[in-house]
Structures are given as C-alpha cells and as structure tokens.
Length: 371
Ligand SMILES: *[C@@H]1O[C@H](CO)[C@@H](O)[C@H](O)[C@H]1NC(C)=O
Ligand SMILES: *[C@@H]1O[C@H](CO)[C@@H](O)[C@H](O)[C@H]1NC(C)=O
Ligand SMILES: *[C@@H]1O[C@H](CO)[C@@H](O)[C@H](O)[C@H]1NC(C)=O
Ligand SMILES: *[C@@H]1O[C@H](CO)[C@@H](O)[C@H](O)[C@H]1NC(C)=O
Ligand SMILES: *[C@@H]1O[C@H](CO)[C@@H](O)[C@H](O)[C@H]1NC(C)=O
Ligand SMILES: *[C@@H]1O[C@H](CO)[C@@H](O)[C@H](O)[C@H]1NC(C)=O
Image 1 (cartoon, rainbow, N blue to C red):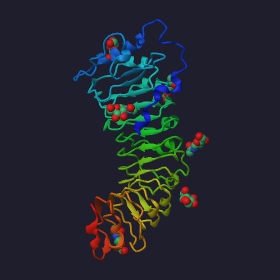
Image 2 (image 1 turned 30 degrees about the horizontal axis):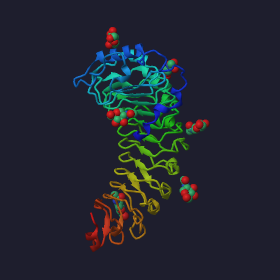
Image 3 (image 1 turned 180 degrees about the horizontal axis):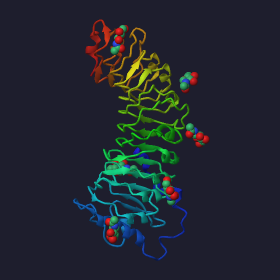
Image 4 (image 1 turned 60 degrees about the horizontal axis):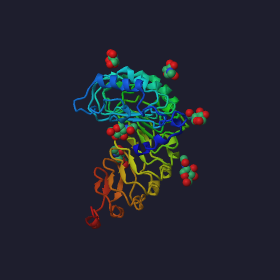
C-alpha cells in the first residue's frame, strides 16, 4: 500500500505559488523552517550521526528533508529509522506546508504526539509507528482533512485513544493502522469509521477494542476496502452483513475475535479474496460450499472453530484455487472422506486437517503433491 505514496511532489496543491526559484535570490530553504529543523535536531540525541548533514544554509539538501521546488517550503520530513532519542521541539510547528511526515522507528520516550501536527493543513502521510509515543492521540489530528495515510501502530502499550469521533472527519483517509493502540474506551469506532468513503486499508488488530455488535450498523461507506484486519479483539459478535458487499476485499483477518454464528454462502461474492483468516472463534454451521468460487484464495485458516460439513457435499471446494499454499481447518467438526479433494491441493506447502471427524484413507495421491 505504501507504494501509493509516490507522486505527491506533483500534486496540484503545491503549484499555486508564484514565487520563482530563479528569481535571483539564493535557492535556499526558508530561514524560519531551517531554524525549526535545527531546534528539532538540537532536541534529540542522534547516536548514529544520521543528522550530520543538517548544517549550512540549505536545509532542502539535508538528509530526510525535501522542499517544494516552486515554493522552497519544506514539504517532507522523513527521519524514520534514524534511531533518534529525545523530545520533539515545538518549533517544528513552523513547517506549515508539510505533506509528508515520517518519524517512525525512533524513540520519543513515550511523549504525547504533539497537537500542532493537527495544524499541518496539507499533510497527507503521517507515519508515527514504532516511535514510543504515549498518551491520548490528540483529537486535533481530526483537522487533517487532506490526510490519506495515518500509521500509528506499535506504540504499545502507552498510546491510546478514547474516542473515534474526530476520525470520522478524516474524509480523505485511505489507509488507517491503529494496531496495538489501546482502544478499549472507543465504543464509537465502527460508527466513526463507517463514514469514511475512501478507506481501503484498515488495521485495528490487537487493540483491545470493546465488545461490538458488528451488525449494529447496516450501512458502511467504506465499500472500497481491500484489507480488513481486526484480529485479536474480543468483539463478541456475529460476522457483519456489510462485509459481503465488499467486492474488492482481498485480505480478511478476523481471527481470535470471539465471533459466533455461521459463515453465510454470501462469502462467495468476495471473489477478490486472497487471505481468509477466521481461526480461533466460535463459528458454527457448514463450511460454505460457495467458497468454491473464491479462486484467488492463497491462504485459508478456519482452525479452532466448530464448523461442520461433509466433504461429500463440499466437493471441488478447492478445485479452482490454484494458488492455495496454506490450508488449516484443524480443530473443527468436519466429516467425510479425505479423498476426492486433497488431491486438488497441488500448491499447498502447509496443510493441517487434524482434530476433525474425517474418515477413510489418506489418498495415495497425496504423496504426489509436489510440496
Ligand atoms: C526548542 O528549541 C529552542 C531553540 O533551540 C529552545 O530554546 C527550546 O527550549 C526548545 N524547547 C523545548 C521544549 O525543548
Ligand atoms: C516511513 O518510513 C518507513 C521506514 O523507513 C517506511 O517503511 C514507511 O513506508 C514510511 N511511511 C511513509 C508514510 O512514508
Ligand atoms: C483543530 O481541532 C480542535 C479539536 O478537534 C479544534 O478545537 C481546533 O480549533 C482545530 N484547529 C484548527 C486550526 O482548525
Ligand atoms: C456515507 O456518505 C454519504 C455521502 O458521502 C453520507 O451522506 C452518509 O451519511 C454516509 N453514511 C454513513 C453511514 O456514514
Ligand atoms: C452476491 O452476488 C450475487 C450474484 O453475483 C448477487 O445476486 C447478490 O446480490 C450478491 N450479494 C451481495 C450481498 O452482494
Ligand atoms: C461435533 O459434532 C457432534 C455431533 O455431530 C457434537 O456432539 C459436538 O458437540 C460437535 N463438536 C464441536 C466442537 O462442535
């Protein structure tokens, strides 16, 4: 998904200035912005010397810094993986034209995410993952109406968020990762996210989400979703009905979510699905025969449920899945013969069908499976 990030240099928002970089003045960066960067530099320890190049007049040439060629404003600051330690100096607020801020993989000592980040009106990419931020995520971020990507995972266990209300104002958002953020008090998460029309990738795994009836809303706007990852949250719900309309969904991970009820035949509509992870829930009913339409699947994990069904009825279930390499249906209640379908699994490198009610002999053909 991050591949999408290229191209922002050509975005129209940077083109309405008339200042010319050939107007006789030196092509140097804006002095206030240089001072802001220097104050940031002086506030952090830089054990690996990554900020060595941060000297001299032209901050546009410093490592991790990029300026607009037209306006000379700093539009990108990417000091990810610099191993910096310390505080973020509030002078950084002077970089008002930032479109891209990446502070990931540093150590900010569990300080709060600065509220002034919410004032970067042109910000489109904000990556603060793996950076030891703590406290409540400031609702000021809700002012970032142009934000496309918000990446905050792995600030465990200190970063938290008590309300999702402000997230519903991020109407340009296509990518949201709040994995490992402590969200136990955010009972409005689904309500807020359902308003985001452009959302494509959603990771809320391991986030202590409160128990949520996923069917408490009938309509969601994020129908362009390609990744839905809610794993490891005690949702205590049935599978949501709105999910079966998401024809672009390719990655669905709802493992360890305390889900109950059955998997409806409508799953056959998710024809883009590549990964299906439903392991460790309380799902009952049959393995839906309509899954045989999901020819793009390459990873299926339905283990540790109470799924039933007989392989005689679900014949050819895997027949069209030419790319399937992982199949785990262990610890269920599936019955029937093991022959007549195992032979279809020609590309599988991991297979676990143990702890079921299978009968019959393992087909000799299984020895012919290449993997
Ligand atoms: C920010 O940097 C300025 C200039 O270096 C310094 O005077 C100020 O104390 C710093 N603020 C914080 C909170 O560190
Ligand atoms: C931030 O930097 C990390 C590591 O360098 C990179 O993987 C990630 O894609 C960057 N995030 C953004 C939004 O550019
Ligand atoms: C940003 O959001 C906060 C709270 O959500 C609000 O109080 C503030 O006025 C907003 N600031 C700007 C500059 O829009
Ligand atoms: C979906 O978006 C439309 C228009 O963008 C809006 O009117 C509607 O309230 C949204 N629906 C939800 C559930 O947020
Ligand atoms: C699933 O697909 C069938 C036929 O392709 C269609 O009639 C049905 O409305 C779809 N269901 C949903 C929930 O999108
Ligand atoms: C498996 O099915 C049998 C009867 O068909 C039932 O008694 C048992 O409780 C089921 N086990 C699970 C784990 O669902």
